[in-house]
Image (tube, rainbow over all chains, first blue to last red; front, side, top):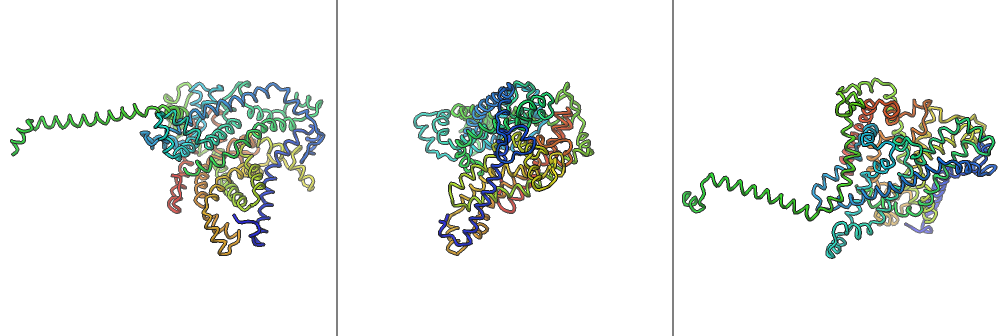
Length: 293
Length: 332
């Protein structure tokens, strides 16, 4: 790229306009988060009067106090951690060895297995057969069922396989000379060399687990097994129609909206904490693996 | 001559045939032995592959076997295999059902809006990011615009519901400042699509720009250098060099997008729509969800799902073939 002082006047104007447009889009991206945080810290009365625009009005922690006192919130929060950690480990346990095997030229039926996996990206049986299959497997209302049934997807395996295929053979040959078998080659050579790709896939798994909602809503019946997203959905849907809650909230300084906003803030915070650590990896990971296929 | 030869080898023609067969059998055994040998040496990669293959069979291919209920009068008690066949009956029912036809139309309309407004957004964003010289400004902006991709649809819906609410919502507050009537947006059918498509752009445009930024990073720098020598300005470079160079990536992303036409992000639809807005918001997958999982009409809903999947499959195949023919870019 050229230096700024080499720019013509027209180019400078162009660059400034672009910078302003990017700034506006960035601000528009950020604003809903600021708004929801402002609602969560406002008093229920101020929120319902439609006063909150940018900063909290009549700042209070009442909404957070209400959530913290709700044991269902804590149960679902804990469940989300279980689904995220357990699910991510489960995913990696399937994806990493599978991608390694598919990247080996000596694998017989390699073309078949690749097609077998890639086909599911273009065609799947759909909601109903998937649901009936889960029922037949006795995995309804099962935490383990959720962790297992969403462990693998074709895209992640292909992304990692492409990455493994790009690793120069000399690395593997050196390990083979030292008498390493496939498990050792994978563990000691391929995994350490593939940190960006594995970090990318790990991020994708963590995010999809943390955000997983639809199937958790459909497959889980017990209240003590639901993740945070289902609890949040339940809260948004019922709180405003709940008469008992309406009586409580008049006495205290919160409303259905401020409580909803506070739960939203609580469930975004872990994402914000993890996000910067993995952000640097995923651009590289997507660049190296995703587009090639 | 013939007799002498026969004497030398000492076999009759019949025996020769038997010998040839024996040799063939041995050769076959040889390849079988080689296969055994191969597995003895390379068993580890098969052990590594098996869990993933079994997972795909159990969770993705076995449901494809269950798809046959789309052609059956499915009863839970009889199971998939023993329910009686009914042929195309469910498909006939579907195409006589107004709400299903409406869902198909809505799916296509929403996808079309997503394509027109949503598809160019990350490309434009990537092109703009490419014009920004100030490195830390660029990094900060990128970090922020990627973020909504990592937020769950439940939270997105929660924010949208709060922001558009007639009493607490900031949108109506601002409309009030401008002296306008407050609108209960989420109960108005005509507002569903703009809100849905806009939310999608807000959520995915930033993250979607990564792929195009990667493509831009791969453009040969000497092209720009010679353009500078020719006195081209930034705008001309963008149109004459950057955009043509990333066209293959744009096409690939377009093919993927077309393949997903029938897969409108229905999680967000489920979270945002309500009976009042079904007329513009109900898509095939939400229809399948209500008919199948909520009303228990599994066979009819499976037929609708199959219709959806087949249309999507045909679309992606067609898009890929056309792209390969006209631009030599294709997914496979």
